[in-house]
Image (cartoon, rainbow, N blue to C red; front, side, top):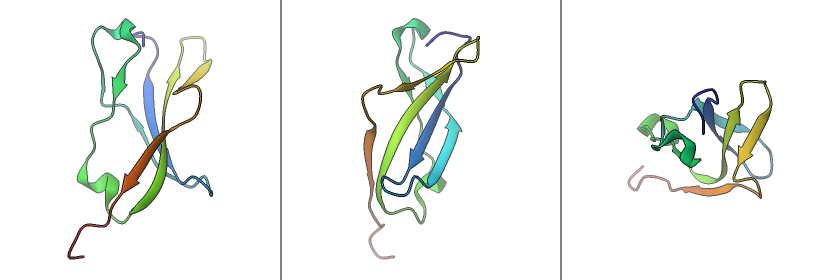
Length: 85
């Protein structure tokens, strides 16, 4: 990541492509040139969203071009229903 490349985190359903999250990644991991980022989950991000999801980080470079990470697929995400609900 570079300072001129804002990063977003997107979570979508595998088969339907329904997007549940599309938010600015909460933090890049120093140094910014390491190419590492993370998303800090909020409880509201998972409420009512039990099931399987795909996650992707996307960076937009200063010239408007975009790149997705991982570049060879997605991050598998499983949200389990909270017990007792």
